[in-house]
Image 1 (spheres, helix red, strand yellow):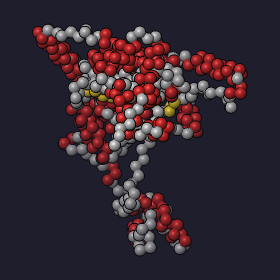
Image 2 (cartoon, rainbow, N blue to C red):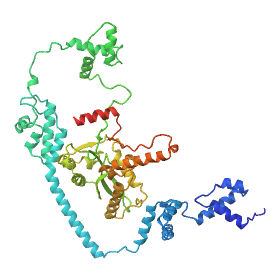
Image 3 (cartoon, rainbow, N blue to C red):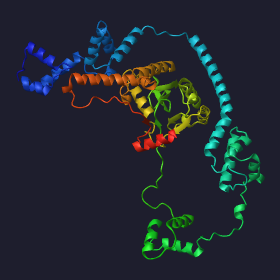
Image 4 (cartoon, rainbow, N blue to C red):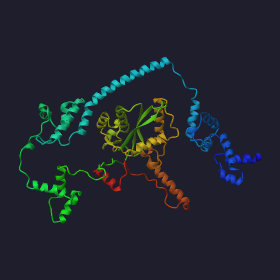
Length: 520
């Protein structure tokens, strides 16, 4: 079989048409030139081999490819560099980071082993001092934390005037919680004061080692006139368990009895009697409903609602991570505070919220700040909650096992980790991670045009610079429409910013009701 030989000029023209970025499709080219598809596919492979970087993502570029790109753009202007990046499918920021890497390639210094050993000793000594300081702080906050837990878990009906009747179940729970708080470092009389009982009452309850029941309910008292007789109670049970009504709930039994001209008791009485006899359990195939209200917060200005979370930043060592603690303002989307550590610790969380409160002047606010987070252990740690209590900050938590109740923090983390310059191979050490995060926060707050706030920066929104910006944009659009009305089919773009931001979606009526309650 004879082999077809194509002219050199023809092959060169075909190579140009197959070369990126405007490469033509092989089937269409084969139909036009009558050259077999296998031959064209073979030629395209050769073309791509000679242009290795034109069809690659930036993450797949080799070190030699990056170095070649640096050399090729060294003499180009900014506009020519931008054009080059678009043709190669990379970002300008990525190219700048490669240039910086080339510039710093020979600056790596290797420290003396003895010096490293001395530095390690110093770090260990410093770590011990920090651990000692942490233990002292935890001891100082132990009583406050114990009282905070006691306040949250304690029965709500123990206070009131002297002589108030307190059920045995509440007495036992109160004694158990007071003993727990006392064991955690809280003084006995302080724990009693938190539950609004005297220490003498506590001692009387626990005399002889057992919690005593109030004797007043045990005495005989005259029965109420409207009380059901025993025969009526028995009739309710018999009717409910009869063949006709065995599968019906009380709210259906009572109307059917009324159709028969018979009235025994109300629906609520049926429920109460069946509850007492333990005959009112959930019988449907569906799961017994448990209502959990979605956390609802509305921000109409900065520093009203903050959300915070912790995300993991991968290190170069596989399985190692750095922890980024970050607080974002829900209204303006501005990052108000952040820190990077190697572990998750309640002390770091407390430090972060104190730092953010001082920076934003939260203590001078009339209304308490709301700090929303998920249910992680650093967010619910006793020492952290005690710090919020001292600062006058109201804590708020997502519903259990609901991943989208903290959307603003999660969205910010995605923005960060999908940046072109995010180091996918991980950070070398804690210092490098902190420096990178600091640069990201500066970019995010001052340069990032946030789509959720009409393409202005979070800093502009946070400090009220958005009003003049939006006014200028609107004037520009109106002027453009006046000059060329034929190019506009409707109104100009709406640059109005929302007056409020909600944590979870809410109806307008609910928002108005909520805002009215807050203002009253």
